Length: 111
Length: 118
Image (cartoon, rainbow over all chains, first blue to last red; front, top):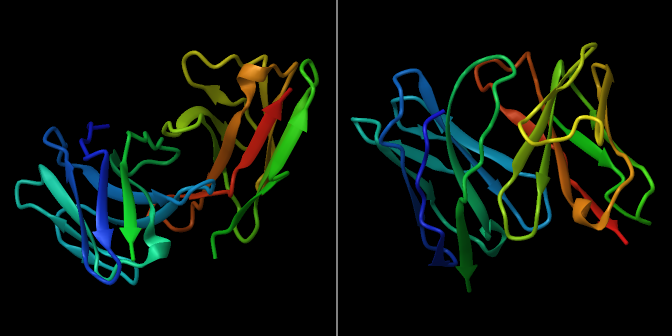
């Protein structure tokens, strides 16, 4: 699976949009971009994933650049409960395929 | 849907004893489950992949005789830490893949088990 690079930490204000960048310059054509988050002392939670097109669900939006070498996760209206470590992972869809977690971005939402 | 539970949520044991952690998929059948370990302020590290009815596949550096994995049914996998030592103290997290949700192909994680070995 391709390696990803994320900033180690970022702060954002409650109620504002949080934009989390991820670089994956070596991504292959069949690799998807997945985002998970882990709230302190809990298991990770799936957020969203995409291949080429931008995606949106009830939790977030995912913007993937045209060359697919980077992406941005957008939390439209951050709340204090969004404070967590956010992981960007690129992987191929395959049965039993592993998830390889990098360092992630520690997001602190401040009131 | 896609709920995964773990039991116990936390356990404290004496050095040299064995500890069993259960991972259950509550509303789906998981042919594949994964076990991770997370030390404080570090990321999750995959320990092993567990397939129902067959032997687990361990990641490099993980002792299979120390971390025994059993996946006897489609909804239950267990991790037994044998002869636990203080350095085994960690946050153990399991995940399960729902084979019916192929469009997402994601893993659903349990809440984790915090093991403290005295």
